[in-house]
Length: 545
Image (cartoon, rainbow, N blue to C red; front, side):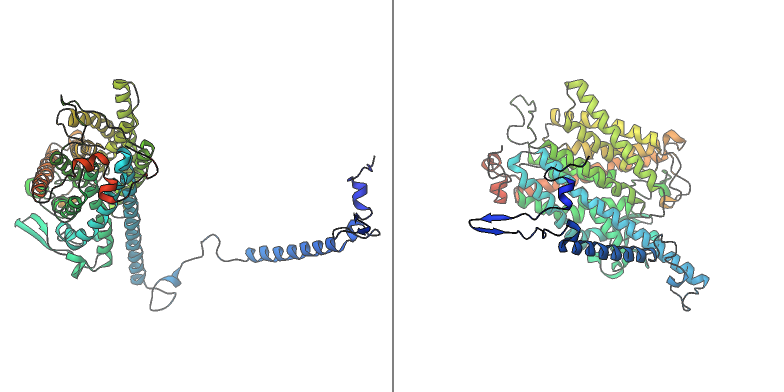
């Protein structure tokens, strides 16, 4: 039954035009059709239908054009015509092989640049972790050290550090370097101690492959230099920090790095003394993290604890972090960046072992996190977020040296031990050594950096590393039939990295303290370093202590 009420279908299709009466005048509005017209006969509707028809035609032509588009699947893109050849489209076998080598090198270089970019993004993670773990009155000062250390590091490493570390590394075969870096100073044949080619990236270093390699190594240096900024936070004078940054990036980090990665004497322990493959450190548990961690210990000792950290009887007091969510987010960013830190350390996308490296990295981080969390949960009754975060970082640090040489079970065990070590070490450093480390850098990076070096000598399973450091055969640890040789080389490296980084940096900080002074005044520390040192507060609208 058809409805005839106002607004129904019967009144919609045939209706008298609406009118508006104002005083003595009656007016038909612009939207009303004449009384004799139906809705379909109105000019506005006719125009709309015409527009719709035209739009339909245009869309039909457009989609028809897409149907005849280019190579949508990609199978026809790239072929013989794209190979550089004397006769276009007909490359010879030699020309094809040359092009293949060029593509392989380009792939490896891009892999390296992308991996290095991930490592650089870790700087944001470190900044968030350190700022979140510290008090808000020092937030700008802490994050400023994390920013400026990178700028200082670039200048010092470009001018001096890279040449000292890799000036004698030889030819970068996976990156297609056209000529070697062959400047290695030796105290005896086969016992290199320092590089001396590539200052200011000049001479032979002005090469696309070496530039890519420099970028990748630069961000590793920055990681090591950043670590002490957390351990020495909230009382470190900014001007003294600047001097430290140049010394770390130009001298301390590069020289030890040369001994392990640059063709130096630790890497030659296998060839010279028969100790496995010599000192191995795939991505830097020792070169990066232990150097940074024990430099941090030296600085924190010389600098002394924050005001109020220890009671009169020596018992450590808890100084609460001002933003744990920020710190936890920083840890997540660090885990993400570690994909490049460890994975790209194969220095080649064509070395498919990088998949094993990345998986081992994640497994160790998970076991480190859970072990630390459950341990403090059992001992103190709560799953402390800061300890869980440091446990995850400890697992990452520990697996960084052995990640390419172990299987997933080995990675799990390495992470588990790291989670235990970081909790015990934090308690020991504060309770026994009376060292104030606001972020746990000494325990995370120093202690677990050493554990990572040792773990390689125990758990390397013989599936990788043939020919490393000029020694035939794959790398095997003590538990996989390799004997004590590789473990011996790793233990030598442990002793050397502690003596070098802690000893040299302790002397440096002592001398700097005498000449320049490295600690802010008591009043500045009490107020917070943001305004006295930086001239601006992180939270100007409220009081944050």
